[in-house]
Image (cartoon, rainbow, N blue to C red; front, top):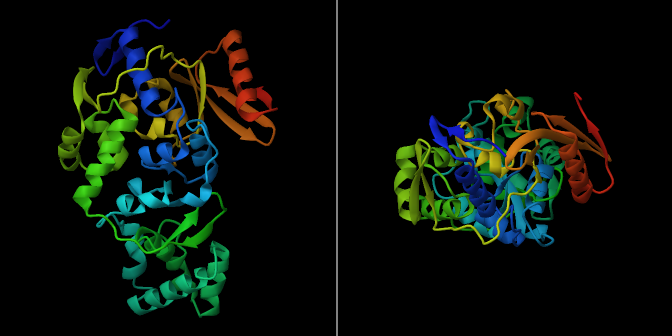
Length: 352
């Protein structure tokens, strides 16, 4: 058992900390799985720079087989790619949610407004006959005279015309395809106030307990913008360490117990949903190993409520890099869990 530990600069007992972690695990469907649509919609999408991460994050939280025709990948929260239910797009792509990266395609000196509109219409026409890969759409634009300078804007990896069209709700990546775009049915984006209130309600219900600093991290918006929504949506609040935390009135289910091992996805919502310096599943000494300097958040192993290792699967090989000392007994437990989750894999412990 862990001794009492600091949370901020305040001492918190092991029992209080465990209850706090358990409530978050329960809110995030990591104690009792839920329907796929509940997970994806409730958690306001699953981050999906790498599609396999989003699918794994869904797999460990859901109790059914997802119908991927109901989902797409698009730029939303914090300007990053997320897996979303198509039905949620009017809310997550609310009016005014477009980013500078997306708007670049319509405001760049190398691509005037007329040319932007020309290629936008071309892409929509190409997608009207069916889903297309990024390369297929690139080829269609090249056939219509796209110059090298224009291609640098249209195909820009951090923005470009594809992203601008996605942020406007015209196109999106398919949920489980490899860089395959699909044309979306027209919809009316929600107004910002109504959308943010709905999104904050989901956040409090599916991530709690959460602080205002956590909400700022998750939404990527200023605290002064988010504070009224958080206070409106929360039903309960309590001090913990140096912060005030909010819930939707959740209580722990009877018999809730800390799972021995959970293989969290890369860019998992349990790591992105909160301010990392305040997240009690993280040891300060290991944060730099989990979040690297280029913005990657590695797949991790949650051991008795604390991140204790990084994992990487390549085919039938599973590499495990301990971040803390892991005894023989727990290594055996982790290996059994790996087989349960991934099937027949050869486990290799690194640095041991």
